[in-house]
Image (tube, rainbow, N blue to C red):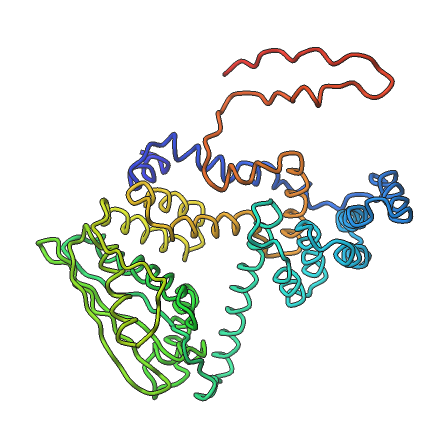
Length: 436
């Protein structure tokens, strides 16, 4: 039994569907990751185009686009410092182009200034858009923030220096994975999914924010190994390192009758108070159980949440959905993003109302698209995006799992089959593609 079959059996699908999804997600990346992509392209390859763009800039003809494309040529030919001026000027001329914002940030990364790059990415006004470059901007923002947080925590623990107590932020929650136990060995993973759901719903509340569970897990692991503050319990140390004013954690137990009991503990680190909220439901109604816990916590804290959905009903496939979602959370923490997406898609099949799974799929797809840790990786990213310029709709199809037929050729539209100026007629129709 090969690995593909094992993965397919674990998520309840077929090997062919797994292969198709992996191909959709990773095909262009694998196909364009050869070492030749990171070789600097010669300026002479773009000589004529560069002259035309400079002429367009001088003539004020599509000035913003010409400046942007000029900056991209400088990046591709290794003239990174020279790319700063035209990209900056292009933004000043037209702030509506997500491609310009992305390359302006990428230029700063290539120049070794990730802080300025992150500032530029976050200023992009089109982060909610569906373009290729909007997704790339969001991916770089998420990856840079994670890297910055890791560096900050590591430095803090290495120096044995925690933020002062008066720097803790009221309304900021640090969530730690709920510890589960039950009759089945796979029940232990449920706590990851329930915690991530709580994280998502708390983050929706006004004046409250939840620190990503990946970060709290990292902070807890470092606190446990560093032994920075012996007088404090380890979760408190990790929460303080993150400047969180409170922390959440808890336990859950599944009995032989398929009932689940969850006790969620809230600890206010600023006022030194503790409260516990509990809920019990059938494992097939675990999504409603999580909703009940959040509602109870909101009530106990006196939080006004008028827009929160309180329609708690039985959700078919709740247990299977949360199991698949929990497995996705675990894989995400391990950096196995493509596999995590497969499990998130499986969770949505069991429970289409699990909106958080859709949000996580988009985030992870952005990470896959924009992943880069070295300068060579950044250059690969640039060339990957430029190579896909002719099919801007490809990203949306890949991001949301549309089925692409394998074995068929791509037939250009009739508008693209015109002969160059000075010639009459059209190119002959292409032959009918034959499936292999």
